[in-house]
Length: 343
Image (cartoon, one colour):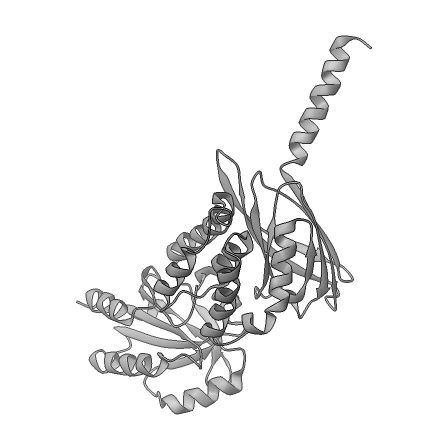
């Protein structure tokens, strides 16, 4: 064999290895999943650039396989067919990830393929009850407990980035974050999560509000059309939130200032999974001056998915073209923007 052929073989081998280092494979066997389409979302990055991958994975008889690419570690977010978040999974280039579990218990999925994910998988399973809690404090306490005793572990950073609820607890979050050592704070790991979140937020702010089809208090589907009013206020909420009563009071006060729906259209949208709870709370609120809606699937509702709602309570103010003029959890800022639009 001459030197030229040897060189070509070596070059091909190097190229093959180089390609494999950017690839990862995920195989899963999910009991009770049957045949459906799972959705995934992740940030694929290199030293020069990054891109977002959103795709559908066919599940046949509970089994699926997916081959992805990323030159750096990433977090793959798994969603149900109706876009309900199932679980995030940490992946490194070259990994062969295996998932085993029940479809209705995604936080208990047993995941293998790299040490960090295996530890994170075990933590999610152990803390499933807390992570599924309707109370932010319970979720954050579970994370804090782990972080305080695992300051050098990347799992602590992942759990904070992916599960910690920062609304009204920014100072607590910052204090907890400072406990983490450099070993836990890989820049690649942080970028894997934050890049996807930043991309989603920028996309969601740029999205124009199109007619939203949601379940109405009258037990039928109804549409919120922002084009019917000069400005629209959307209030997203859940039953057990401490701020809900004050939010409703503030919106009632705002409605008295602008009772004409052609100027200000108000709609509040409940994000709970239980319609009984929604109806019960709605009766207590005694609201008769604006329309009330329920989002099947919460943030994963197909009408709301493009908005990428980060939490509740949350407000969106739009003009008649559907342009989002304010997004956030501060009612005073939402009210200020409304008054500017109605001058």
